[in-house]
Length: 163
Image 1 (tube, rainbow, N blue to C red):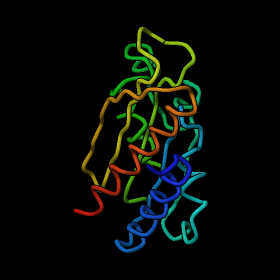
Image 2 (image 1 turned 60 degrees about the horizontal axis):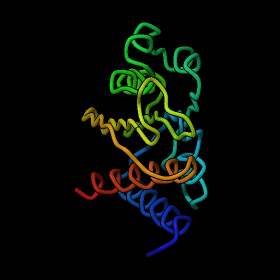
Image 3 (image 1 turned 90 degrees about the vertical axis):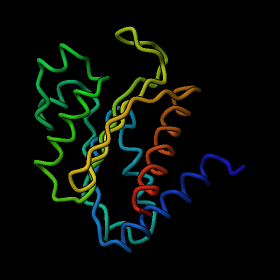
Image 4 (image 1 turned 60 degrees about the vertical axis):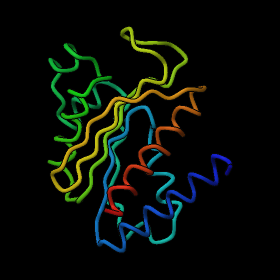
């Protein structure tokens, strides 16, 4: 089995190549990954042909200020929810002309929050108006959870783009 670093590099390359082939652009709204998606994608040559932007909205206030998430939604459901992912995607849509939007929020640890387990991650993908909004659980330490989130999300994007 490939090591995590090589796996991420390979997936990033595949994603960039598929986006180029399909002439699509991508943007991210990252919370718990803190810019990891953007960082890994831009390590690939020609990423500039497909990558529009990434907003790192780590704090609740950043989600409110940058993506216009509603404080009432955050207060009612927490930032670790499908409802907030939906608002993150909507806010990203208003700021980006990308064809594919990705939003991620979750708990990488080391502590639990709001009764949710470490490794609880919400991932939203808006591919030309088709929205996927899912809850997942990953195991490991903080960094492993962030890497697993990227690997899962990039695999999911590649799967959709190959259809």
